[in-house]
Image (cartoon, rainbow, N blue to C red):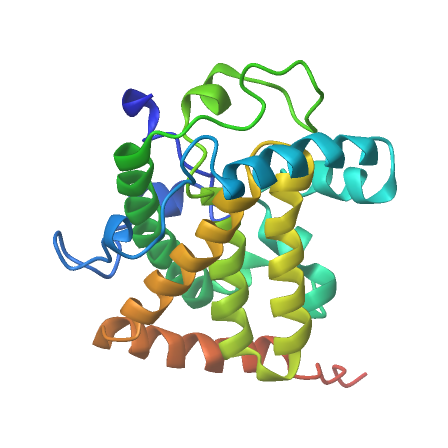
Length: 237
C-alpha cells in the first residue's frame, strides 16, 4: 500500500496543481501523524462503529443521498460547490484564485500522502462484497483509508472560499461537510477517515496562514473574486 500513497485526489485545477509548488518548504508542513488520532484499533468500539456505519449505509443505495455521494466522487469542486458559491466559477477568468487553490492543494496532498503512508489503513470495503458508489479500481484499493484525502480536498476548498466569500460562508461550510460525508456514505472511506480528513484540512489551512505568500495570495484572490462577482454593466448601444 505504501507504494500507492502518491495516488492523490485529482485537483479541479488540473495540471496546474500537479506542477505547482506549495507554499511550504520541506519540513515546514504539518505532521498529521502527530496531530490526528489515527485509525481506530481493530475491534475497538470506534472500529465497530465504523463497520456498522459502512454496513447500515448500504441501505441508501439508489436513494437521493447515494446519488449525491456518487456525484461527489468528482473532484470538480467548482461544479460540485456551485450552489454554495452562488455561481459556477470559470477558472480561466480567476487565475489568481486558481493558483492559490492549486498551491494550497499541493501542501494538502503532501500532508495527506505522508499520513496515509504512516498508517496504511485498509478501506472499509476490503473483504466485503457490499456495494460502494464508485468502481473498486486498483488505485482506490491500494490508496489507504485514513485520512480521507477527498474529504480534505473538499473541506480545504470550503475553508478557503468561505474566507474569500464571507457572505457565502455558511453555505460553503455546510456543503464542505456534506461533500466529506459523501465518502463514508459512498463506502470508499470509514467515518473515522472522513473525520480525519476534516481535521487534516483544517490543520493545513491553519498552518498556511503563517505563510506570508499565502496571506498575500488570499488578499489578491479576494479582490479578484470581488471583480468577478461585480454586476456587469451593459455595453452602450
